[in-house]
Image (cartoon, rainbow, N blue to C red; front, side):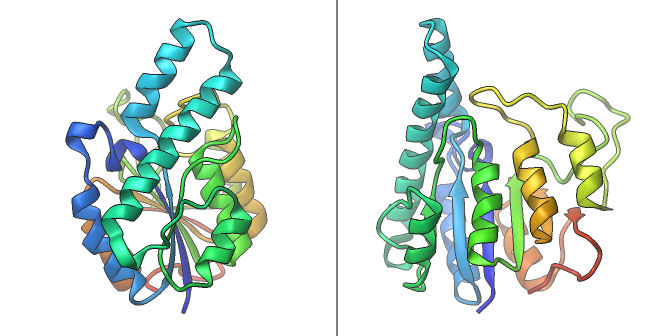
Length: 234
């Protein structure tokens, strides 16, 4: 079975506790896992940013604020595992080594953050390397990578394809403060460049976009690769 790593943005899975999409994602992830070995890295979402805003108000340093955010990502991951039931490995992986070991069970492996200063996108990128993934998918709140923030610049255009080098040019200047919510961070982009694993950035606000992309190769988004192979469908 081919291995798929999905970075599931907290902003789409749990923008807030009242507006989560866990219930909608469960059948989608189960369907993918029937065909491929699946690893999911969950972000912190709105709840993590709420906690981090309080730590900053209290004058708490960024490293500690990151640790608080990591705890929220793991709480989100715990809820997803519980919702997936027997299809998921019953423990949140707290390191890449654990995730790789848990994957031997054949069940869906779920993890959150690991290290302060590192986003869950970066965690997912390194995990893709560690497990030898065929594709790294970043399911986020936009339908790809744009020339500028499409929410702020109406003239921004989406890339259908780009090289890892171009990706680095775009994200290289982005900030990495606690609770960062960019489409991808520079650490993840550098890992994508060195690993040669294709990255697909797509709109995760509609869960079925994942099954359409992975199983059918039908999606709107941005493919980041060296052009040696078409990443989807698997």
